[in-house]
Amino acid sequence: MPAAPDSIERETLDLATRLIACPSVTPDDAGTMAIVGARLEACGFTCERIDRGGVANLWARHGEAAPIVCLAGHVDVVPPGPSQAWTDDPFSATVRDGLLFGRGAADMKGSVAAMVTAAERVAASRLRGSIAVLLTSDEEGEATNGTIAVVEALRARGVRLDACVVGEPTSVERLGDTIKHGRRGSLNGVLRIKGEQCHIAYPERGSNPIHRGMPALAELAGAEWDRASDDFQATSFQISNLHAGTGANNVIPGTLDVVFNFRFSPASTVSGLRSRVHAILDRHGLDYDLAWTVSAEPFVAPRGGALVSALSDAVAGLTGRRPDLSTTGGTSDGRFLTAITKEVVEFGPVNATIHKVNEHVSVADLAVLSMIYERTLLSLLA
Image (cartoon, rainbow, N blue to C red; front, side, top):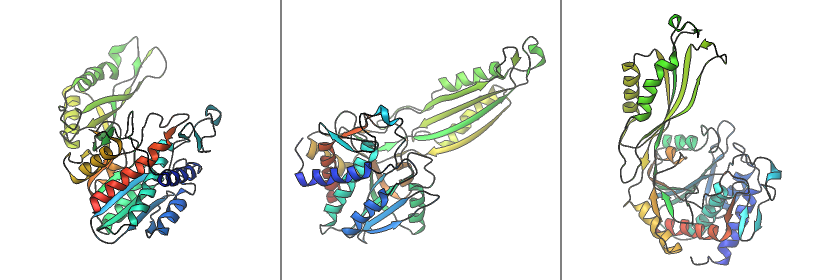
């Protein structure tokens, strides 16, 4: 992998260090938005704060015309845990052996720094269209007042984005080995199967919801919901919580509570999954209540689309390897951005240490990451 120019490495590392030094445990931005906003305004961006519910959100744009290419991310981090477990203070932003250590180094203040320095360089070029930067301090938390708030504000204005790169740490072993070009949907269910409590020595006087519910749960766990495709794994049903009983060993419980989740591909729909679950529960003759929430709908950027092609070419040109395309893993703020964007992908540094003690990122990788973002912007706006 070629070395980045010293100026790019120095500027990206300096900004990443300043951001990590801000203890922005979600949803507190701890001054990070002011740092980024000042940088972007200095190179001609119009910056707007779209804060909501105690969450800091930044929308910055350079240019007035289409196409609009957006770099998106978050400045909030998960709690670092006991500081004594870290080799250095988690917010000291320590460089050692070519690595930058600190909470958020990989997820995702390193990406934010790379995005900002890339946007600064591209803003100095005479290109068609617009560059946008969207940041929130509410990605690691509830995610109810962050990116979704900016998306709602932009949609109300009729603003649509042509492409968006979310700087999530997608690389697995080496920078550039993986691009997330989509994500599965997430559907949650909270199920209560009703029985009748009684003394365990007289089961005929009650109704055991565990015994009645287990055959239905086994059918749900063993069902084939759809099949894998070139882009997506098959839809998965998983039970995450199961509870019944009073704690006594001589009482049949009155209810069985089950929390479950579907990670689903575009081959399935929310309405279809819900209908199939209800049909199984009804076929087993259960008395139940079931509440549903949708955390995310699935999305995918086409493999041959402009954004995937531009980013893949930039990665290959700067790292010497062509990235794999993947839709595995959890949800991200890409789920919100698809509402106003033609194509959304995620790309960022190696994710091996995210949310861990001694989280870190390669200093050299940050500089190359900035160059990848720059080359992608130049390709889409040329």
